[in-house]
Length: 345
Image 1 (cartoon, helix red, strand yellow):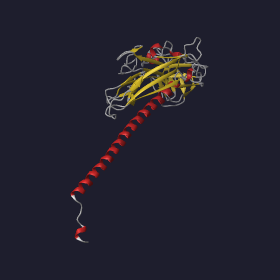
Image 2 (cartoon, one colour; image 1 turned 30 degrees about the vertical axis):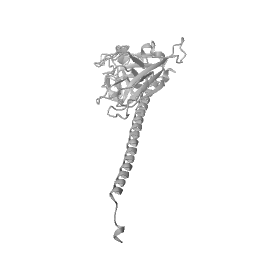
Image 3 (spheres, rainbow, N blue to C red; image 1 turned 60 degrees about the vertical axis):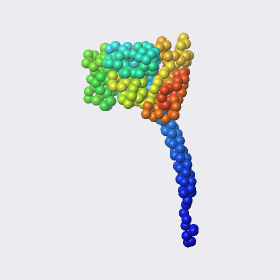
Image 4 (cartoon, helix red, strand yellow; image 1 turned 135 degrees about the vertical axis):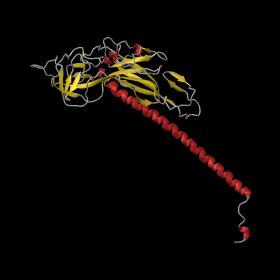
C-alpha cells in the first residue's frame, strides 16, 4: 500500500471521537441512573403496598372472627369463670376494644399498664391509635369427649376429657363451647395429654373463681385457646416505625416495618332497637357500647426506610384529612380498608 494511504487520524479527529464517546457514555449513564431511580421507587412502593396488604390480611382475619363462640353463635351468653373477668386481659365478653390517641403520650380511654397482670401495649408511639382484639388464637378446636362425675355428666366436675393433643398446657385460658353454651376458664393442670383440670386455687394468674362451667360439655363440644392481642405502632431495634403485636403477657413481636401511623374509626349501630346496620363511624373515645361495633375502618400510613431517601425533594402527602410536607425525602403512601365484624352482622 502506498505510504500516503497510511497517514492515520489527526489530533482533531481524535478529539472529536473522544467528545462523541463522552457524550454517548453520558447519555447511557444518565439513562441508567434514571432507570435505577425508577426501579428503586417502584420497588419501594411495591414493598409498602405488600406490607399494607399483609397487615390488612392479619387484621381482617381476626376482626371477622371477633366474638366467635362456636356453633352457638354470638347471641349465646358467655360464662366467664376467671377471677376478675372484667379486667383488661380477661374481658373476653368484649372482643373488640379501641384506644384513641389524643396527644403525644395520651389515649382515651387511658391505656392499661404494660406490666403483668394488665398486659397492655408496651412502649407505644403517641399520636397513633391502638386496637385490642380478644378471642381464639386461630388453631383448630379440640374435641371434648367427657365431663366425668359420679353418675351423669355434671357442670361442677373439675375435669374435662379431650382428644389427645400437645397444644394445651398449664395456665392456658380456654373456651369450652357447644351449640347452646360457652364458658371461659383457665387450665389448672393438663395431664396425660387428654385431661383438663379447671379447679380453683391454682397458682397461675388469674385463676378460676369456680369449677362450675355452668353447662355440661360431655361429648358435645370443643375447646379452643383464647388470648388478648394488642396492635400498635412503636420503634423497632433499627429505630424504624413498625406495627407490633403483643399476645397476652408475652413480649411484643414486630409484624411489619415501615408503618408510621395508624388511625381507626368504628362503624356503630346507633338505632334503637338495633337493626344490624352501621349508622355512623366514630373514634374509639366516642364508642359507648362496643357490642354495637359492626365494622372497623383502618387507615395506615406506610413509609420507606430512613436510609432510603429516594425522592429528590420532600414529598407532600395527605393522610387523616390533612396534607403534610415532611422535612425528609422519604416516600409515604396511605392505605385504608373497612372490615366487617361478621359475627355481629
